[in-house]
Length: 313
Image (cartoon, rainbow, N blue to C red; front, side):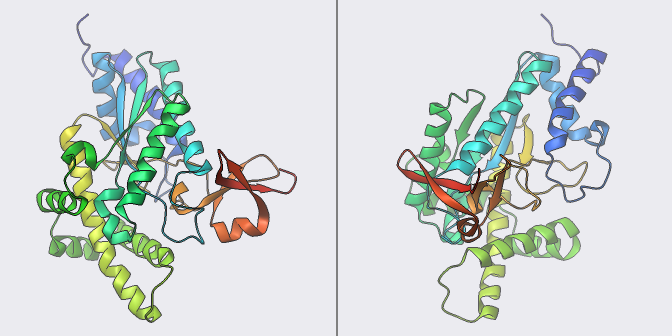
């Protein structure tokens, strides 16, 4: 059967229906701005190309890098209930897309921990263990709409530092270009400030002054953004037609579509920077470990710390 044109009314209708399933879970820098499907022409065009060809919609999601090195925020270096819930949500989202478009959708989780592991001060062996367990969780739970991808699939068994250097050299913007963008672009400036804040929060053993820590984290934040941009460019080169998701808040109409993995009032919150508390009302909430310890009891799954259970939960 020949492919339909992307402007065919049936293709346009289904593409809007698919995007309408994503919009309620949007991670936005402008949450109060109206966001109908037609406000996202890039995503509509990308989705329509898959629908017109009758193929599953491919979405790429850089993220799930590794756990924060700050044990006041997380339970350890392996995925836990937060990742399990987030993966389950992503798989259910793909299943819902299949209800309106029978070829369905699949999400490729592009784990980026190795890309900037040296900058966030997480050992490469912890990143390997996190990524391997994430893949195992997907397999054990039968999350057939999800798959993983990381630097090992790009550059094989090269030393991690060599992989980072190669990707940075080929794809990253220069420091001068990025600094100019941070000065001139509000969204990039917000990203830079947000990453700086995370790096400060993730530092548990800095021996200098607070102002010295801020300077150090601002320097590293530029490197994290450079490497993140490089990773995004590599993914775009490998999967040029995919719908590009992001765990960072995005404005209406951006080339990337910000996606919330778990509902939380903090648009920057992720399972790898927090733990989950199972509240008494049955809902799950992301928060730092130190806070969750005051509100609930630690629960283990498969012999490992998993999450916290609130009294009456």
